[in-house]
Length: 186
Image 1 (cartoon, rainbow, N blue to C red):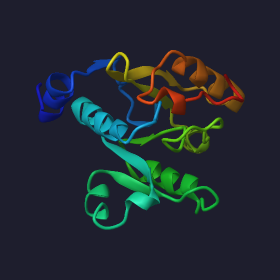
Image 2 (tube, one colour):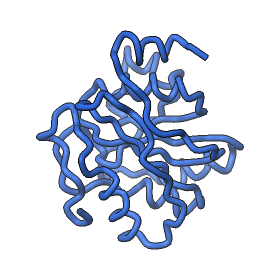
Image 3 (cartoon, rainbow, N blue to C red):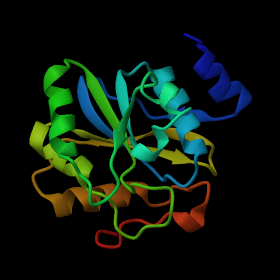
Image 4 (cartoon, rainbow, N blue to C red):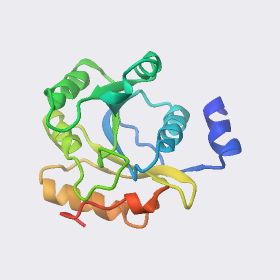
């Protein structure tokens, strides 16, 4: 079925989707690399195309006028910056408990800027809620967005992070100088 999202993604922007979004009612979708504000547009078109009920975590700074008018209706959840966690893991766990179908979307890098240590909140949310992690990607060289795989066994954080790092090798960011795999696991 052709939608406005697919028309824009495929015909106007020239992107393609790779991989199939798994038939899982509850999940955490991590998307990397995240080096550009344009990642948001490509991601939103992708999510609309695959018809997934989702909420995206964004830094709270985006929820000021006039952006606040569109952020929440577009499925966005404000997140405090480092040092101001405000029980985010419990808040997201509550969303999973109160919804029969939900995909929480976030960037494990936590920012568009160069970082050597990724945020691990997605791992802790997955562990607390027993929800699988779907590893998604945006590759600007290939003009491709898609799914690398699903991680259901999250019993060991180091193993999980190593698996994720391997999946993101050879994925090309819009601004490659700002994308580094977590140095602790690559």
